[in-house]
Length: 419
Length: 165
Image 1 (cartoon, each protein chain N blue to C red):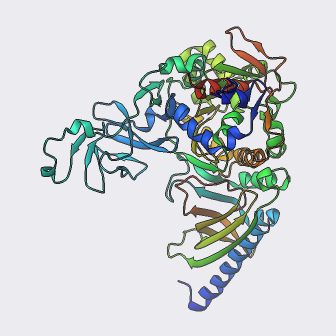
Image 2: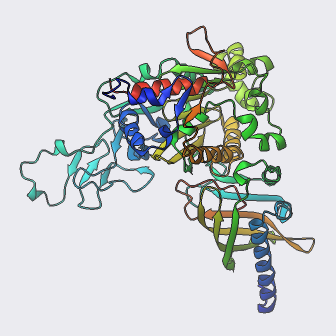
């Protein structure tokens, strides 16, 4: 709060139709984001299917912090901080594995995979110590929604369900694309690093204005129907779900086409096994509707992006240093669909992808660009006058409108402003 | 078993081929590079180690012949912004070896190391890789039936890799 004027610094930096360039480049603001967003709100960490068996673990992250996601012997999923309670050494050096315990290499303290300290070397120097006070640090709250595991470092605050709000329905829409109602994350991650602030990625995920320009090189040479979805004549929508969650809703276009699996550029005939399983699981009518609507294109604030066939996880490492972790979504009980999902994902994203390499170039150029201070502002006013409320009360606009960015910044300001 | 003399001749042809490939890549001679491939060529840049199954796990690049052609066509548009402007590149190829285990079909298994200096809008980046080839004689010329590029740091987060590696 500025005592002289009564105006909060955030009010000066974030306006309804524009934000100040320093929000992307100021390292003090980045530190404040770690505290107020990454270490306080719900952040996506991993998927239950990455630790299918007792004692499986996989190393994940919340911002720059390393987090071990374990499944303990009781089958419970834990989010443990990768830091020995003794001198701070990282207790886990492998990306994944199966282990009942983690032994710190420095002084041989050993922790069970639920975080309990089970032993230290030369215990005769520790008379009277309470081991229960020396466990591995934990992410304070852990909740999962349909297999997607989120963590929050805040003891109090909204539940995960409250945080997801209307966007939870997009995850429901995703999992019903599987004949068994489950997504699996089993194909390994590509890790793509960019010299850019994480919010350029966050905003770009539901920016329907750029594909026609940034991806023109691949739309021009491949038989892709994606380009038309993002054209001026498209009936697709952008949506602000609140809480920073945003969507590009392509269903109006897919429903116009009225062809099952058109959302994935394929057909029922090419996926006979999948189609049959879907009809058995949901009945002919509902299966047809699901296969016409397709999967969502949704950005769950601040770091989980589901892009029809892929899942991205945004990780900020520094004010100008970010990683996009990306993998193909795999639908349980759909082997013929899954193979295509992997092949298409490998073509389009990751460091050498036909699509993402150009997106990444844009983030980096934006980051270098906003270091210039004239003009100071980033303009986000596209579609402001024509946005409206949908039947559920969420703000929607044309697919090329900046409804998502404005929604993100409204939520961001709430999180960053002192209560 | 090749005689010492024919082995030396083959090695010199292989070395010339790998140097030429390197130059075509460094100089963005996309069409000429594409012609080095056999009709069933596979271009593979694994992620997360050297020995993943590309049919099950994500790779940085896992292109069949038609996708190699698509990659080249995208580069040729001049609107693949991550290569507009093009990276300035120069690479060293070394440690070229004819591998002991040769495929049954007459292809030649060859390996080399490469060190690539890339200067792009972002920054200057050094890339290092182990390259494993299967080369084949087609109409009297060597061609690539497969090329596997194992980046030394492929288990870490890496910057955009949009040149021909």
